[in-house]
Structure formats: structure tokens, C-alpha cells
Amino acid sequence: MTDIDDLVRRVAIRAASDSKDLPDPLGDAQIAEAEGQLGFALHPLLARLYGEVADGGFGPDYRLLPLFGSGSSVVGEYLTRRKASVGADHPQWPEGVVPILTWGCAMYAGVDCFSGDGQVLLFEPNPYGGGSWEQCWFLDSSSLEAWLETWLAGTGWFEEDAFERDDLDEPRPWDRAASRLMSGASADVHCHWSFAGRSALRGP
Image (tube, rainbow, N blue to C red):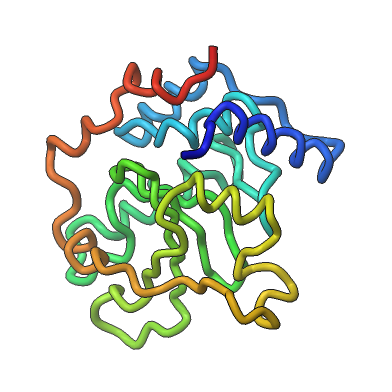
């Protein structure tokens, strides 16, 4: 099992190495404000990244979006996409999945804040041919921890030389896409991560 404190430390070292001009980390009050706008708590590990590493600007490829504020952000992108999905015949974006970075070409990485492990999803809209958006959602990683480890190790599908490897683990269709897109999460799942519930993953 990953030592979360060690993982956050290694992510911070890599982030500082990749960029000499990282945004400052966010305070607890700022993270709580963002969560209030979202209507649910961030996955605890994601909250630690924004609170202990930086407000975005690190990670694979185009790097994590800032949590909120002017311009493209996690909160802004989520609220815009959810507004367009609520009440739609074919909702595009599931409740509780926050977009954390763009891969370009309208593709996003998202963290499912309603899943215990913080599954990382890939939204790839380019195959969309009308009707359900189910076909556009893929499971990138079973957990945010594993996704970060893949980035640190340089073994992700998004690496430049990825498709030259025989052991490449590519995203696969998300088996919960249809149910999450149409029904969202139940009320009890909203409380899965309370603000206090992050204590298990919060450093000393």
C-alpha cells in the first residue's frame, strides 16, 4: 500500500523540479470554498495535492488545472459541464467527476470524487456519434494514487514513447459510465468524503 505522505512528498519534489514558477498551495479555507461551489468534498488525496504541492501547474503533459478562479479551472469546468448535463436527454458529464487537466483535442482527465480510491477517468469525446456519451468515458487508473505513481515512473500511456512498450496499460471503457451519466450518485454517496473525513490522508 502506498505511503500517502511519501507520495505527496515525491510529487512535490517532481513538481518543483519540472517548474520553477509553481503557484502557491491553497489554504484550507480556499479548498473549502471550492468544495462549497462544487457541492461535495474533493477526494482527500486530490485536496492534499492542492493544499500541499501547488494550485495546479504540475503533473503530466498539460498539467493540473488551478482549483478555481478566473480562466479554466477544476471548479469552473465542472460546473459548466454539469449545468449542460442536468436535465439533458443525453448528459455528457457525470456528477462528482472533477476535470483536473486537459489532454488537448477536448479530452480531459477527471477524478471521481465519489469513488473511494479516486478513480481517474479519461473523457475522449472525439468518437461521439450522437446519443449516449457512454462510449466517450474510459477508466484511466483505478486510483489517483496509482495514476500519480505512473506519472512519477514515466510509464503512462500519455508518455511520448508509450506505444513502443509491450506492457502498456491503456485506458479501457468505464463500466459505470451509463449508470453515472443517467442517474448520478445517490444522496448517501455525496457524504462519502466529508470535510473531516480527509483526516486519514492528511499529513501531520
